Length: 326
Image (cartoon, rainbow, N blue to C red; front, side, top):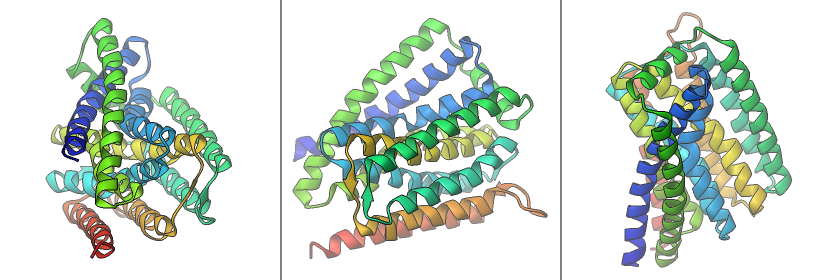
């Protein structure tokens, strides 16, 4: 048991560090290969910050623990919006200038509705998973199209500034890219092993472990990058990290896990977790989209609302688990 807890703590720490190295290496490698900065921000960074969830969920599904995979994806989405954007907006209000991100907000809402509709029958079938993966590739195609077509988006300017600030040679970028990927896989295996042992020891389901410990841990790269970005005034990067990650999580992470191991889904996932994720997505859309007469920004009050929502959700989850063991 002690060894399993150490594995979870060390696995999370290594996962966060390796994900950061992987994203830096991938972004700079893409720059050296001539990829436009906007495309790097929309695709490479979005993929990189979701790499921990992807690897953890794939390994969980392969090892017969699909609950961890599903909980990791949806729990990360909840943490990304409520915890990460909540904390980030409290530190500094997030001003949304990118027109590309304004288009991603309704897209994320639609994807969330699809995810909920697929779980109404209590199953995530292999067919459902392939629908998610097919839509994921369509979204990637749309992102690539926008990244190549737009030349003057605010997100592009912020990504260009970040790439300039973290300049490195192609050789160094490839080393960090490969090293980060290898350590991502190792740390994910370690984390999943430890989490399963801890869950079994406390009599907690794999789903709850995925929704809490693993979800928060795999969201730490987004938290670190969003806080760093907003301190530099790069607000679109902060929001883009979350939007990109949530799209990847809902489509690719759940899709990969479901394609590997179709699963039965408890009713509580739809009535509690997906409902919370959907409500937070609606709130994010209302806060950040910027309707007529309202600025496109997430202010401190809205950040506090998001953070309070996460505290409330986590408290309810903890109470539910505790009440079953009393």
